[in-house]
Amino acid sequence: STTFTIQTVGRILRMPEQKHYPNALLNQGYVYTNLSKDIIEVVKDDMNYISYEKSLRIEGYQDIKLKSSYINQRITRNRLGSKFRKAFYDTAEAMWGVSRIIQAEGTSYIDHNRNLLEKRLIFLDCKKIEIAIPTDVYLTGEITTEVATGRMKFAKSEGELIQLFSHFCRGNLGGYAPADSAPVLELALKLFFEEYLDYFETDAIKIILYAQNQVHFIELIEKSRELYAKRMEEKAKNSQKKPESYIWEVPVERAYPEIYKKQEQVASHALMPFYEYQGASQPEKLFRDYLEQHEAHISWWYKNGDKGKEHFAVPYTNAKGQESLFYIDFIVLLKDGRVALFDTKTKDSDPEAHLKHNALLDYIEKENQQRNQKLFGGVLIVMQDNNKNVHFRYCRNRIENTYEFEGWDYLKFGVD
Image (cartoon, rainbow, N blue to C red; front, top):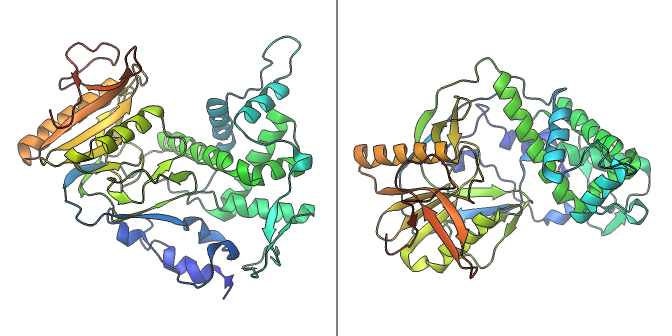
């Protein structure tokens, strides 16, 4: 059937204990259909869990049994509140450089902000924007949305645009309760366009829904949710919980949202195919290439996630004296049986890098002694010499900063 309801998929995907599990197989639900994804529409509360891109763990994967940590900081009220808009504005200013402050005498911050977005290839010419929708979609706002197998048409009425915008917002709530949270996200997006860019509702919706623009706004929304969650956790009474330990392996499978892109040239990642975050840093990309170039010494490598129990984390005390988690960028199993744990950075790019590095060294020393592991690693600084040759340096000892490199080693797989 081309009609899906809350009951069809929601009962499959809803987590019975309202949490995710280290074993990825316990977090998955499946719907089998002979319809291609471009002619199917799934709507309403639980649909934001659906992802179309998935990687599977490679055959012959060798266990590493790392001890990982997790802090359960779930907030009881799982909805976006009034403080979300401030988090959204702060994220937009940090990511895109936009501002509501006049940059120079005689200039408009509106024009300044519009130019910044256009430089990021965000298309703003509303008169030329048309929003494609499948033929015969009934945008009624009811429990179901029916989709026929026809081609595409364009949204022409304001009502159609509003319905599509509502579905877009509901699909990007990241697990927050849609009934309470979708209106909050919708308002934040509209007011951002009004206050920073001088666009009002209809034009703002067109810009957001324009196909090539969506990835930018999805990333902005995701980062805003993360900042909002962090701020709410800091205020929560029981936020200072102790880390819980468990044995971690690379997930059996992992779903990737559309802000990740398949990288065909990668062959030795622990999950295949390999999907890379479109906003991946240059150090991450350079180290990814280094690992592929040295696959003769590597059984597999894994690009770790940056949150959640399914990803590997080491506890550390942050600059504020709070217990936090350090999600190391790369886990690498070498063919000699050692496991490398590296977090890629550039010189003096992270004020807490030394705290994370030292905590990781403590973890490595303890695991090697108590559990007979073969671990090494630390913060990995990416450097270029005068000839543009790339080098990676790390320190086997505790450090106070990441701009003085006396005693640091050069990474050379097959030699270390």
